Image 1 (cartoon, helix red, strand yellow):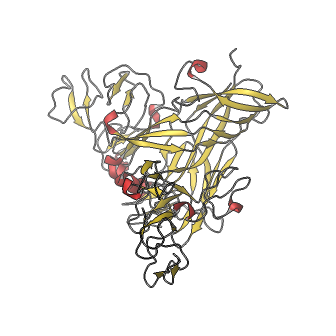
Image 2 (cartoon, one colour):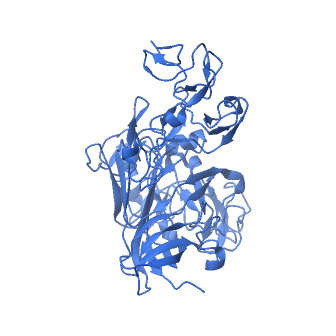
Image 3 (cartoon, helix red, strand yellow):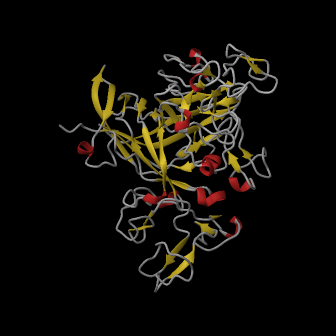
Length: 516
């Protein structure tokens, strides 16, 4: 078997570039200092610090309009085991999924249904109420390739179902002292913490340094540390008491699954799950890991949008994204949100409708304008072709339509084609017919990635080196992927979804004997 255990990251693991191939700078995105150089988000009043180079051990997400400070920190101490199902040419390994029986735990296996890492907190200091807790589950059995001579891992496919919990700050008030230390309470007048007290933990405090835990207004009041508001979107496993703080298992015994040193939102563990009533939805993530380089290049889908990494079918007027596809009826296999968009059929939810994406090859699921963007694969739906709808009524019922209307100065000819206007030549509904659903544009939430108008995002991993000694070797796995919308307007606006995502997982790789 091949075991990979994540660790705390350092250094850089990739970059994003502009149209000319230049690495983008670290600049403020949004706020009073938009476009100005920055080091941290504290330099960007009302905005975030967008990094041109990616920090190892970080999760980046969103388009050019993201307002959540990036990156989110990826948990360490997480182990996943893959099975070596074949070995050819002495060192070329075929990797497959392990089961809970193989590994002894559903937290370390890689078959469908296994958990992938501890709960992941995504904090949003500017809007703490929109902070989320993510529980990742393996959606399909893992499969990929590795080399025991070089320690390289390539195309390790681990599709995920990411369960999103909109929790905000679970521990805004916490008990201090007493037998319930660290547990949630309702306000400073709450006597349930006796003989301790209930304190407001949503005010800025020193994180680290000689004044750790004291209230503060600025970093200068925290020698050796930082002044920050502690936000804990996931329940934590209190390292001092060994008990869950927050969530349905509050007060029960737990074992930390990652390090408290990662920040206020840690340590987390599946012993302390998030509150089930805060469940928002599940996002399918086409996770493909490599120790090499993973990259995506944005395409221009004009006039709808430039610098698009991850297209989804969208209404060009309301800017709402389609939630699913019609099953049956005259609009079958076309985008929809409500059953009324599917006369004679139903609208089946799919967490958005992909468009302008490669199928197959190393750029699988990446943006494409033609087959040339998809080496060893195809671009079956360039532009808006996957977002066509069917006409309802009029003189060409059932015919495909590409626009809800032909726009100012344009008319729909009897043949169902726009003449003049901004959509000249586009397919339309003649004779007063309606374009069902009208999710006819292929876009992401806003252009670009991670706060800037990027053209390319690139993540760089590191191979583990020769592994025949069966020792632990440093390695970094990386992935670039698309993230669909959550369909919560506030969350999607803050995280700027749908959009692309990048993650780097520093850790230790080790070849182990496969149990009989």
